[in-house]
Length: 98
Image (tube, rainbow, N blue to C red; front, side, top):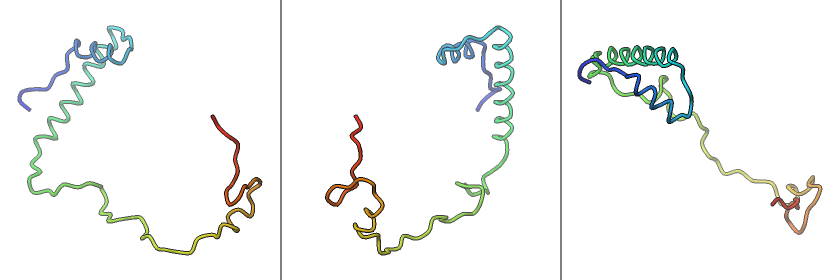
């Protein structure tokens, strides 16, 4: 990033137009100032030497938090259909939804 990052009032107006929102002149000035302050924070972060820091994908050192898949016996068709209020053959019968 060379120079100081800036967001212009025209860019704010363009984004507002894309978002289909109307902004007052005061709002345009406020958003321009706020977004430029945010970009200046990013510029400060870019100045930090991170060459010796390994990239991270998560702030905590997590491996896999999901349990292993294990094959277990499932319900039989009879047990699965036992409490179904409406059944037809070996299926649960439900009303049609269009």
